Length: 366
Ligand SMILES: *[C@@H]1O[C@H](CO)[C@@H](O)[C@H](O)[C@H]1NC(C)=O
Image (cartoon, rainbow, N blue to C red; front, side):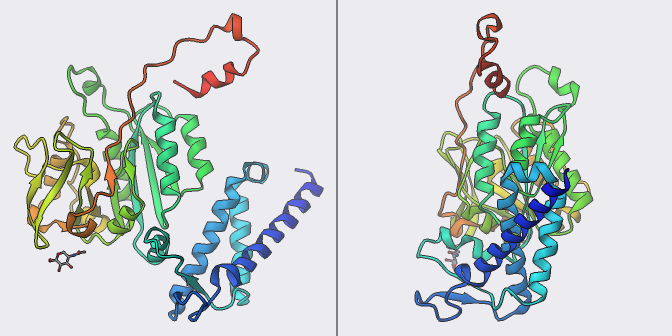
């Protein structure tokens, strides 16, 4: 890179940091403990305040990453390091002043990020595979997860190689993530009837957790569901295994624990089939520590019995120990939306459209 261009970028970063500082010390923190709106939250605990500052810096970095022209020219890593360094210096000299965060409006959604600054880390395990709906589904899901703090996304493709469009999408969102592959073993691919889809991916996710995570909570979140961001805050407090209702699921329209006076009484699911845990993949979360204490826990290659098999592999663990979320399972915060299946698109007539935009578009779709 040319020297002049480098200087220009450093100046630009300097300006960004000043803007961040301005935001931290004024706009976002208006009000202290007695703001005009009357509901400002101030953090007396310096550790919490520091965590909040750190989080604001991460948010700023996330924003900067979205600008591809900057990040491509100087590289993600350098940009990240430079901003973190400048940010830490600012914090060290106390330039950010006292930190408090305004509790905006009455909507419970707007308060979601507030609860998560010091809350346990979330690991979202998402199996995916190349198909016409893959990029649209992952786009929707990514833009949901962008609203969730302290989250690491494991996107695991059933493929030999990573799909470049998926890598680019993940990179663009600024979400902390690992993009992995875990092809279904050949023996299951050849088998007739329903295939154990997503099992190799989820087991790869578990393997990653065992190697890289010490605490926090994980959730098997498929790319074809709709998630209310409040769900992720519910999940964070999971001690062992938590469960909640899933909408648009089975012939009953939902799958949920049955609850009486705050006590688990059984399961409501349109397809029980002798399962000990007749639940949906999107309906439970598990603490990482709980998983680590069960070195043999794994998901079986058994279509229809993946959830049941995995939850049984967490033994000792009984249904009555389930932690109920979503207000004693009275709220639906996740739905099995599932896009309509699309056929692979027909080939493009290259003699007719050789020099057109369609050549590029065709590479973007399946
Ligand atoms: C769940 O129900 C129990 C018993 O009625 C109650 O004490 C508890 O507050 C409820 N929890 C929530 C989050 O509503």
